[in-house]
Length: 426
Image (cartoon, rainbow, N blue to C red; front, side, top):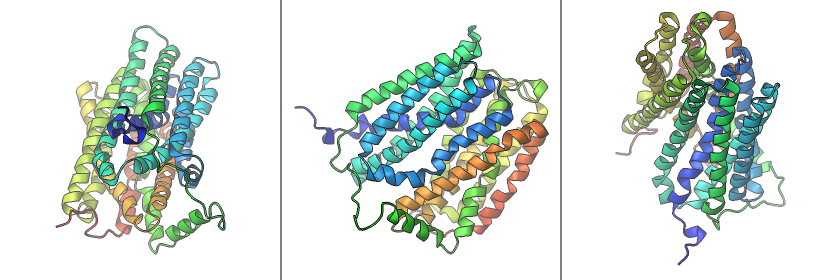
């Protein structure tokens, strides 16, 4: 007997849906930086222009009502996946073009907007298409497959492009081939989802009260969010807890790739894919898992300051790398892994503060607003990081990064944490 779509096992679509959610985000936020560095774009321009790609995630809370009220989540998922696949192919086509920077940025913009919209629809469909027990059961599954896609893009794709470079292909051709392969794989995911994503009876546009304007509910929820007594402390936390990391993240790959005469470590593209895109991602994931379990045992308040230090002090490894200039591959791997593990552990506090302040009748909207401020807090500092690096040089830039951790400590002291929040029930 044929299985009805609504009876389809979550295993047939949840893993692939979160693979599809992670790929474009990583392509836009991380792979684009490595691509432009290999194509000779300056650190200043890389940081400035790729940081603008955060904007779709900044405005996501204001765009989400459109996704909620028009058409189904399944429609938005499939439409955005089609656009993402086309954008990947368009980037591949325009990499070898004379004016590649302008054209590829335009297509990365389309990819970023489609990815942010896909996030809204995919997370919404996850809640609509699964029962509550399945939602809880598949949280780990979706996270695991998101990380697998992260390793495949930041690691596997970069290693592939580097391997093609080593085989004699020029940089533009190597990366064009790599992007064509990703475009083909992602388009296959889209075709698979045409049949695999179920037709849920709960997946329909949100009902509207004709007596109220389209965005009146959104505006009311915004007012409630900004009427919090501690709103200034909360916003400061969202904007400045990752002030140092927002600048650092844009310059890690350029630092690893730049030759020693320019202050970098002079690694190959493939080596960066292994160190930053594979070992680093695994360390980040392990740090996050440990952070979540630690909070479960003792609560966020107990671990907050340990997480703050864990988030920021490992940035010291880049001061060491930029001054010692080690050539040992394992030493560099270990240093990046330490920083990424600390970041994963410390970022747990950020995630839980977003959840904590989103409690209430507008939980979904307030969490979306929090993620928007999170993206804004990454976008603005990252925009001037390339300019700072070029003005200071890598050793002094990483000293500035250490100084930039101070706001993270200050805003952590301002946020009030319920001692019982996040802790397991006795």
